[in-house]
Image 1 (tube, one colour):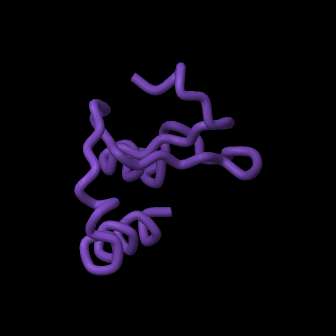
Image 2 (cartoon, helix red, strand yellow; image 1 turned 135 degrees about the vertical axis):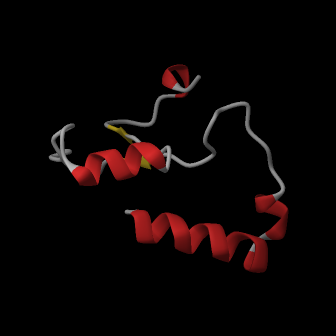
Amino acid sequence: MLKKLEWIKTWLPQKAPQINRLTTKNKSAFFWVQSSNFNIPKHTTQYKMIVQKKILPMPIWDYSQIK
């Protein structure tokens, strides 16, 4: 997931600059919508890495949960 995040951050300015200029009131403009169960325990290095990059999994896309 982290590689995908880095890829999209590189791709957007080059291939979709109009989308890249959009802003958000959220701390992060990127969300990970789960396609199945999320199985990374909170004490692991992998979980800590995704928290640092500000991408946490969302089981469903729900605008009311986005603050």
